[in-house]
Amino acid sequence: MELNQLLERITDEIAPLRGAGSVADYIPALARVDPSRFGIAVADLDGGVHGTGDWEIPFSVQSISKVFTLALVLADSDDVLWQRVGREPSGSPFNSLVQLEHERGIPRNPFINAGALIVTDQLISLVGDASTELLALLRAESGNADLRVDDEVAGSEAAHADRNLALTHFMASYGNMRNPVATVLDQYFRQCSIAMSCRDLALAGLFLAAHGLRRDGSSMLTSRQAKRINAIMLTCGTYDAAGEFAYRVGVPGKSGVGGGILAIIPGRCSIAVWSPGLDKRGNSVAGVAALDHFTTLTGWSIF
Ligand code: GLN
Image 1 (tube, rainbow, N blue to C red):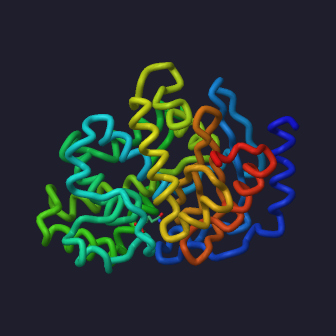
Image 2 (cartoon, protein in one colour):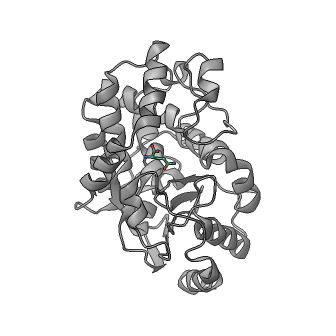
């Protein structure tokens, strides 16, 4: 079956799930998005990109940004970061505080909020303006020079930041923060508030399917580093539902509370899906279902 036909079929099959779940209302600006939106895009290693539905409409990438900040930090150095953050699944909600005290301010992995705040802190130490560096990477990889931070979403996150403030201060109290809490949070909210379409995101994530190579053939990461990011996406990318996601979809994936999911099929393609209705763990209901259909119909799960 042609990829376009396959994507149309998946879009039809998930139609009853459009609008299922609930939008992320703890960030008020995200609660205004139409929950029945659905888009999917697939970028292949030859640079082709196919999509259906709302695949060219920008949405808030939220935690999907954490994949790219991690890539930027690991591209510089593998060692320092892993003294400050682990790489085990948390089994806890993405914004949970409970493990942090037991584990003395060292977050379980780079994809829960606490771990991502450490990665952003490290990126600030490396480059200063972390979110601008991230935006430059995403613009280059997606080929879309118009990508922007949505200042309304960033402001909304900053105005409702009690949990992320608590996480950051708590880690600072254990000496695991190099930059001022306010600076780290400002950069973190900006990175989460970048708006991208499924098309942009599938293209931007392609280096993870291409064993670390960018679309122009230059190296973003070594193949070993790309392998490792994919492994962390598989085990930690969908929080306390990572086991269920591996069971249903069977490829590395990273979700965000904007309703997007980036999924990587190493050696083949990168897939971005978007539908704002979330399940209780913060993953898109229709998005996970679409990826489940995709890997079932193509046989392209890694298992
Ligand atoms: N900006 C969101 C937060 O910090 C990101 C969470 C997510 O997408 N899971 O709460």
